[in-house]
Length: 99
Figure 1 (cartoon, rainbow, N blue to C red):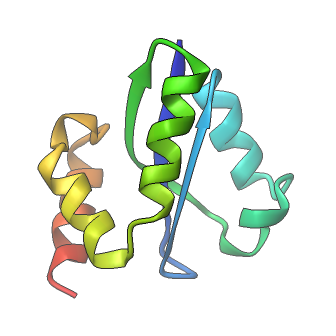
Figure 2 (cartoon, one colour):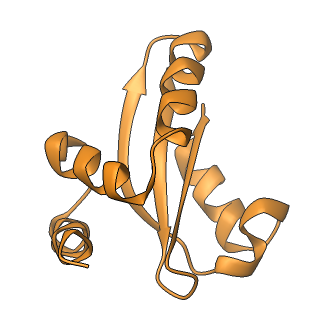
C-alpha cells in the first residue's frame, strides 16, 4: 500500500505533495530536515492523505497534485476532505481557503 500526501508549512506558507509506502517515517524525515526539498519549511503538518494500491497509482496522483496551484490544492483538500487526518487539520484547511 502507498500513500499520497499533502503537507503544509505554516512558517513558509507552502504546500508539499509526495508519495511513500511509510507515511509516518516520511513525515518524520520532512520534519527532521533530512529532505532537501522541505528542509526550510519545518515544521510540516500532514494536511491530507489517501492510499493507493500500487506505487504506479500513487505516482499518477502525486503528479496531478503537483500540477495544482495553491487555490486548486486547497479546493482539492476540501473536496476530498475524507483524507484530512483530524479536526485541527480540517480547521486549518478551512482557514487557508479564506486567504
